[in-house]
Every structure is written in structure tokens, then in C-alpha cells.
Image (cartoon, rainbow, N blue to C red; front, side, top):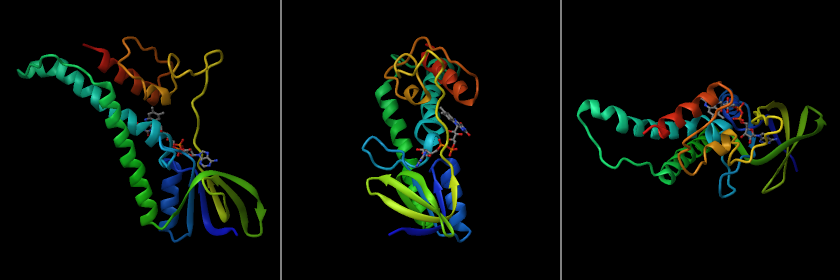
Length: 208
Ligand SMILES: Cc1cc2nc3c(=O)[nH]c(=O)nc-3n(C[C@H](O)[C@H](O)[C@H](O)COP(=O)(O)OP(=O)(O)OC[C@H]3O[C@@H](n4cnc5c(N)ncnc54)[C@H](O)[C@@H]3O)c2cc1C
């Protein structure tokens, strides 16, 4: 049997989860569907921003800035450190825990605002009387009927012709968050907010 909602939001990134929270706060019976999985296959709401974008990049940027300060700025304050080194696996583990805190925070906000969260892929089935039937394909298959649907499914990194992402030499923003060591040379194509983040973080870590 289908479950009925006033509003169903497909996508739980910053666009979707905030829309869902606002709809619930305005008194609409709301559900949010998101398919992002964490390493264990569990839900990881928050979309690109939380999982492979703003949050993890700032977590790494903060680590590389600490390193840069320790190596370059502390000396001016009369503080000297010997044997300064980066432990990249530890840096990545900290980043992962920051991401998880944010995933958990969004799940808490869903609960607090009485939003039904469904972990899986949402798709339109058909228009029905008074709304739309939405299928959720995931751990459990669900069928929902929504009077209104908000599509907030985000975007994907664009592959350049002839240079597909192998996440080793040619990295998307996702693979760039998982490099196992500090690259001594890094070419960045593009100069928007995403690319600028990487250029800054990479330069700070590689400078010695
Ligand atoms: C490295 C990097 C750094 C960034 N830094 C910043 C920053 O500092 N400040 C800033 O403002 N922005 C930053 N951004 C941009 C920001 O991440 C995006 O603007 C934001 O995530 C877009 O939000 P969204 O909700 O539209 O889409 P997304 O965050 O992409 O979320 C879409 C969600 O929908 C889900 N989804 C898609 N299709 C379906 C489906 N059919 N069923 C169920 N779920 C589905 C996806 O799994 C995803 O969870 C950064 C991005 C990157 C990559």
C-alpha cells in the first residue's frame, strides 16, 4: 500500500534536506528520499556538499592550513618545530568523522521535524488522482503518493572528452578527497569554488 504525503523531496543534499525541513515546519506531511550510501552501505544524507564537497574539503583544508602554519608562520612567533610531518591516513580519518557527524546531524533534523526519510532511489511512476506516485528502490521497496514533489537531485562532475576519471591520475572531486598521500604536483582544470579549494589545499600541503 502507498504511503501518502503532502510533499516528497527527491534528493537529500543542501537543496533537498533544507526544502524538506522547511516544508515540515510549514505543516506539510513530508518525506525525503536520498540514495547516497556511506562506506557501510547505510544512509549518508547531505549530498555532494556533505559527502564529497564543502564539508570534507574544508576539513582537509583546515588540516593542511595547520600544517602550513606550523611549517611557515610559527617561526615568526618564535615557535620552532622539529620533524614536521603529515599523517595522511589520520587526516582522512578525521575528515570521515566530520562527514559522519554531519550525516547524523541531518538524520537528527529529519527526526526532530517529523520528516519520513527513505534511503533509496526515488523515481516517478505515474500521475495519480491528486498527485504523483513515487517509487523508492532501496533496501526496502516503497511506494509513495505525493501531492507535491520537489526534485533536488543535484549534479555530477563533468567528464572532459578523452579524459575519463580513473580517480588515480585524473580525479573528480570525489577521488580528490581520497588521495593517499600529498601530491607534489597537481594540475587543476577550472577555477570555480570547487577547483579553487583543491588548488589552495594542495599547495598548502605540498609546500615545505
Ligand atoms: C569539492 C567541493 C567543494 C565545495 N565547496 C563549497 C563551498 O565551500 N560552499 C558552497 O556553497 N558550495 C560548495 N560546493 C558546492 C555544493 O556542494 C553544491 O552546490 C551542493 O551540494 C548542491 O546541492 P544540491 O542539493 O543541489 O545537490 P547535491 O548536493 O548533489 O545533492 C543531491 C542529492 O540527491 C541524491 N539523488 C540524486 N538522484 C536521486 C534519486 N533519483 N533518488 C534519491 N536520491 C537522489 C544524491 O545522492 C545527492 O545526495 C562544493 C562542491 C564541491 C564538489
